[in-house]
Image (cartoon, rainbow, N blue to C red; front, side, top):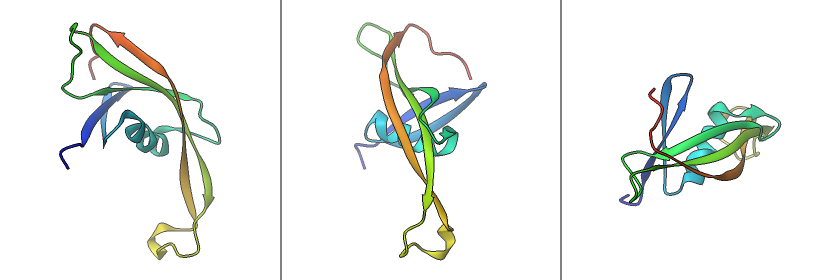
Length: 103
């Protein structure tokens, strides 16, 4: 999987890493773990690990994330449980910064 990229999210001094081909895939994973229930309201920023723009800045992909709990499909395995989280993601834009906050 050479196309896989790693995206970092820094929250409350801790760094969380999500992988995917696009920032949106990483945001979907972050939404189920850190989002607010019922709406895409929590703001997160993701940056690609080890990547800097040509002008020396970093791109922070900004999203509002959340999730909804839904009933699991009838053919779901037993270990999945009765409820599943469906991520909600809304891209707000891309912000360029000179320095990345330390975790």
